[in-house]
Length: 571
Image (cartoon, rainbow, N blue to C red):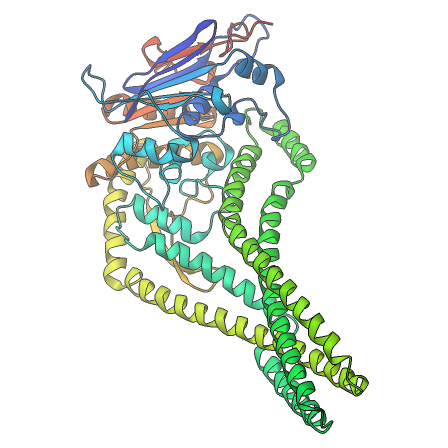
């Protein structure tokens, strides 16, 4: 799919329409060299964000400053909301009139006033990613997600401008990257979803087990249980020596059963509450991560960096906002179990209440006996011991249950890994990388006279499991400009490779901050994009940084200035 046009309108009418074409598409500033105007902050990068917005990016990134998610451009936000700005993005599989088109329409409002459509059909926000993927490619992937697959097509934030392959947020696990990169390079792995879920489940189970064994191991709990059972036997012997009348013994037996049942229910309630609290704590941990970053310190670092690199336009806060979105989704996933737990806790409380009433009736009947004082003392001691016994048994049962789950999932994961890391699978991975590297090397030779390549290695993750790790070969010491050139080589090579392997991909790349790339390489990138019919390269760049060979009207799709910013908001 290529970009055909991006349209911005509101209740007052059309604001802008940007028509894209094959090859190189430049978004530039139009600033006279005779005055002190700047080409920055006119909306060039916002165009790239609006395209991403139509692919599911959160709308608040359009009016949130890069200094932090709390720094909001109120003027832009109010304009987008109050004038009901509507964004329309047209995608097509070619540039002919009969080309298949996908049209996305979104606004920045919520509730009933929200507009979220694909080809004229209203779509729920939770279904948008899957529906868009089906509209574009005719498929629906779960892991990797659609947003993960297309992440390298949108390079306008710091992370994606400096990382060739690791284009997701910094909290993404190695296994998630493994699944993404195996998919990207055409190494079919049917159990990718299952492997990720099992790995997450194992991480949660190990954490739960550590929590259960924080004060005592399973062995220590069993030893203590044996001692408590011995003490219960002694107390029962003393109770039998009281020689109570038959009716009293019957009532006492019934009372003990009630107390034992209460003990079991109390233990069960405690276990349920513990699980409930653990999930709530996990959710709170996720929410707390939103404030883990010291935005004041980040702002200081940003200012220092800005003093040294005048073209630096973005900070890590774009990534933080994306991270917060993923935290909300993870919190929603964890919250799914809470209603059932809450219902179970409520049921326990109801049963406990009923048994308490029965206990009270039996206790009142037993108090009429002349041996009530001796009996009460024994019953009190037995009750405490039964409670202790029940708590120990429950803890042991919980540990054994989680041990069983861990063993089962470890075995399943082992079987999956045996296939994933077999020699035949590694041979396939290398074969696919060899194919990709032919394109990658060819383009990098054209730009830099060097052969770039992607390699893989097997590394151990935090849980000690083997994981495929993909990385550019020996490019860590590149300058910023050359690194961006390398990334451009990768992105263009990937489109060629994906087409050859019939792997679904987007045929456009949106890019920012290419001012640091040398003119010679910029010229080669532009020429390559113009020469290759299946690559559409959209770049936001300061016009005075363009080489003369590219600074042509046929390459430019949008000019912005301090007097004509993107949204044309009147002062």
